[in-house]
Image (cartoon, helix red, strand yellow):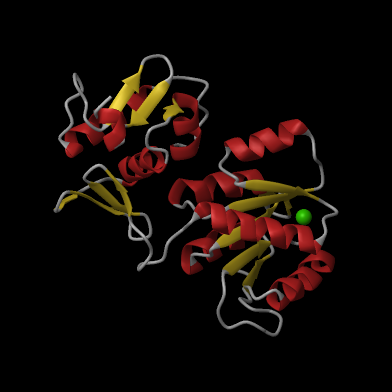
Amino acid sequence: MSEISLNPYPAVAARGPFVLLVEDEQSIAEPFTHALQRAGFRTALARTAGEAISLTSEHAPDVILLDLALPDGDGRDVCRRIRHDSSVPIIMITASGTVTDRVVGLELGADDYVVKPFSTAEVIARIRAVLRRGQRPSADGEHLRVQDVRIDPGGRRAWRGEDEIELTRKEFDLLLRLAREAGRVVPREELMSDVWDMNWFGSTKTLDVHIGWLRRKLGDDSGDPTYIRTVRGVGFCFATEHDQFQ
Ligand code: CA
């Protein structure tokens, strides 16, 4: 196993969001790490796909900048692997900027995409944007409330009234995804690509199965649901209190 240097350059910021840079080219990694640190970020550097995966699971970064061309593999595979276990924001870095690359990257669960050569200022602005958009609350962060359901996105816990709901990882992701957009119909394809990092061009039966489990745990009646409504042929909607009285 190669030696991993968590902080290869002098740290400027002891606190601040933790950025994992996955980049094998020293001529990019070194100046960019300095720029990130000057901007108040903590940094770690992974030079291979293997390091990217191990550093992500060991250190839980707040955001990952992921180069697509790595010496031991493809950044897209790294993205897929990370997405399997984590919702950490991922910004892909690539030399090519074709629409296909962008679409593939986003389907795999990347949050954003920059094309080399990029300006440091641009990437830092993108990092700040995904951190804001992700609204990944810390342990004391805000809970999300819809009807009598309360969700702690940071702690990955959910309650109905006073009772905690025991959810699997995918059930939690699905609940959070729907509740964040309560009142809006979330298309099946969006749920499949956001909650499952699999190719959703095939069957979406797994989605229906999980919706069924989630409804049961919420005490919802699929015939006359209070929480999760089916919009046939389109997707699902987490009903707000307002929706109920319409
Ligand atoms: Ca590279």
